[in-house]
Length: 137
View 1: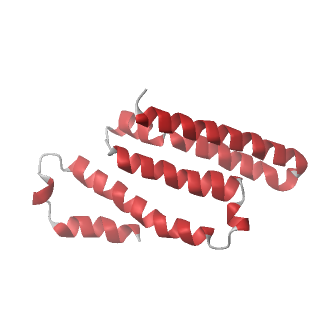
View 2: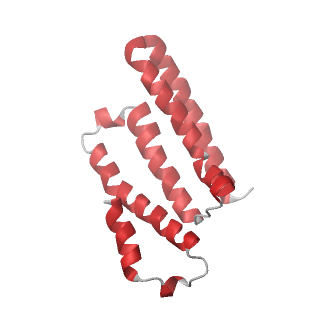
């Protein structure tokens, strides 16, 4: 089994354990628990987003970008929202807002290089990369 599949299965295992915890929370406090369960289910679906994008849109992202995406998903959805670390750690949201532009820039650079496959990356004007990097902020 490749590292890619090991990381994905590990994240899936953690996400299903998180889902069980949120379902338990839903039974203990029905008013707020349903939203967290739906968010956890959406997070589980988002784990498969890179594979679906590759199959449907034929966009290939580097493994490092996908790993960083999964790390951000782990930090924001499963730890931050579902396990309520945003409530427990005051600067948790600041960490997420610091890492999300990096992720969006990496995805933008992946789209650029996929869209301009005929042109070597070194021949792409710098302003194109700057535009995607600035757009992520």
